[in-house]
Image: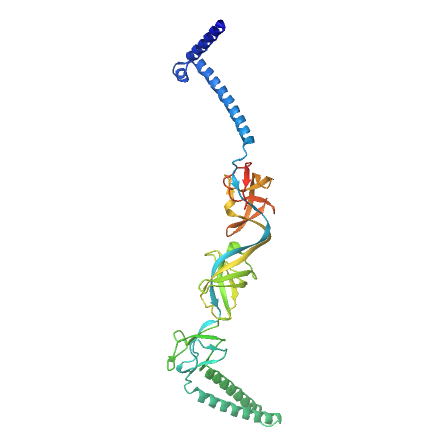
Length: 390
């Protein structure tokens, strides 16, 4: 027993002496040979490899035994087919093709004004009267002369039919009658111009001259502004890139910010000329205005339905990422387990038009696919995740 104890002590002393003689890494770095350095490197590398193997074994064992696994929490949305309408939004101005200034056709003194501002008038209604300067008497005289010439011609015509009288007498009577008839007609037309009439039905927007004013044809002698608010339209300019989709008959949603009013209408005319200055073409949209509250030059916001898909897949733009190649991708929740766990699967997608916060997916994703929503930017391809949908 004493011998065994002595041998054990000696062995411990020898091992202790061996460890004391083993040089430290610092000593080897400072004084060791290249052979000693390589040997120590190999020894440390082997120890690290053995340590990593042990760590992996321990982690695997912990993963099997841990009942509460800390997986990334995500929520999902299920893709579905739906009707998708894309709208082009532009600004337009309200106009009317019946908004004109009424001018006098003859010079003279404005004798009477029969209408006032805001009054509704009909086409052909007399708005004002200009002094004719004795033209009425001249017309009466011309009428009498034309009547006399007519009587003379009729008598001469009867005589000529009876072979009485000369042909020259007959022709002179006929010519005199035609001349007097034309003079009377022209003077009658001239007299009619003393009455200023409405060129179309509408509303007197402004009375620009009062009775007693001296007026004459030409600029500066405007009498009235008359506007028809029933035949209104909106004019807007559309970029040429939309020329294929913005066509006659397309539905337009019109919003008037000042009136806080929205109406539906259709494009009634598409221009055939592209303005080289802004590369745009014009469109016209008829506007119903039975209430009369829509006025010329009013600003309107237009939403034109330029694209429709009856079976579109829409997803939020916020869940889409982009790789270094510029490709867009999302993560799908695949290989679901117990409706609670899944594997994040990275999927490249192709997108189309946007509307608000959503964008159309053109391919890759089918209806009924579960797409990772919240947490989409914190997962990796192939990573196990936990689904926490409400």
